[in-house]
Length: 637
Ligand code: WTA
Image 1 (cartoon, rainbow, N blue to C red):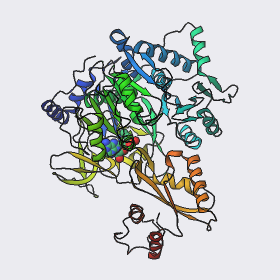
Image 2: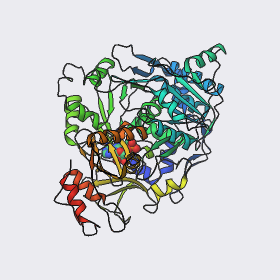
Image 3: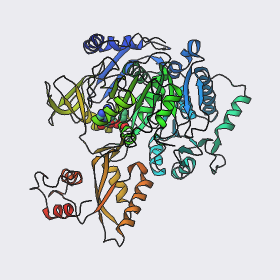
Image 4: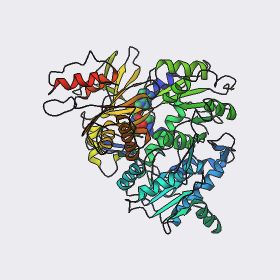
């Protein structure tokens, strides 16, 4: 496949950027022209950020799977679409060509149809990282069902919340998932989740771990049996459902600073164009290259850069079931060596944790196939950046530090590999079509260079979220009401003397733990559900490997006899309510929390204490009871 919209030089980047600002509609129409549309759009863009109401390619008709599969069959039918590496290195890997993938997606799409799934229905997917996960996602898209993938680390309660919010009618899961030396009983978690989910009529279970599972008559079906049925029907084709450009493609739940996670909604046309454009440009993908993204499909990175971006570009995408440290800390490098990986896209937290094992696991691995490296999910510290550059890229490979969000659908600010001059710790420059601005607390634009502010985007881009599922008002208040006429990212940002952007981290109450977004309020709610807990306050603190750790201050009804056991109980509760990823790293029991006279917890102070900045707590004059702070300082962990 050729990519006529692939930027090849800095001059070309600057020209494209200029054009994308002067004539956004013309710019994106040129890109969108290179996709397969059943019917071309009437209008490229209609928008206002007040409601918000954003529509791209209105009147356009398409199916994203025809762009990811059908259109490649003629030229790339025998090219690997997915290379799958299992958790256990002794188990055989799988290579799925574009033709295989097409057949499997059609087959499973027919399974969904046989089970009554129709366009617009919501399907919850809770699976491990096996090819069937990608097949399930694409099969939904094929028939116009809206997928909601839930990361395999979330608890039954979290899944139930997401299923109920979306009113999903079908769940696709596995008996279990292998991750390192763990075997996660996915189906049994789903069984717990479904106790309170009457909307779910069917559960399709794919075999992976052969963990014993209970199968409920009339509700639960085996993936393999359902496929056999389609085979006995003679494997009929499954024509793609014609979708409107603005029909929903998927929902992906993400944490915010308040309340329950919200369902970020992406639509078919704009998302497809944006995921593809950003993939092809950021990584400078060349036909034939093997591309390996270590994310999980349960997160947006997996949606956009394991599945939709690469497949729509006819790329070979490598999917890895396991974890970077199993069976040893050289696993990622072994995979690069084994499959001659050319592009590696991973997270700072993985790099930092692998750095800790020294160069032993890297030595003797042939990494000479690598050409481009990428990082995503959190700020990458300079030490990790250099380690990645020197020891993995051997100084030859550009690193793209890609800043973006679940809500943005695709990469927003990033170097273009080999084109943009990089600077460690900087996401550098916006891609064409992206108009970032920095504002102060009042929403006044901060112009010029060498300035710090809150990062907003002032013009729509095709991959942006359209709404939050079932609650448009929440979308408005969260992203479009803080500052007039701007999309607010929630991130703080520096623009340096070169006009380069450096993301400094969240400015709201959202934590970024190992690249996972977790709302402090969510963790507090979970802790507060534990019997005996009166109140809690959760803040982040710098953590060497995870980037941020979770620090919880907890007030209990009475003093516990065995504080260590109570801590473990609280961790257990958080695991049950949210999932293990939200477990606090530190729990400090306190008798009170620093509050203002109006009862607001002064998190700023708690954050400082957690960070160990005890002497510089700032203004404490509005505190109701300053003695509380002294006590918390004394018993700090
Ligand atoms: C953070 C992940 C610094 C940021 C794709 C953002 C980053 C949040 C970077 C979104 C980066 C992501 N440098 N920070 N390169 N990439 N972030 O929705 O705080 O899981 O708002 O999307 O991660 O996390 P999300």
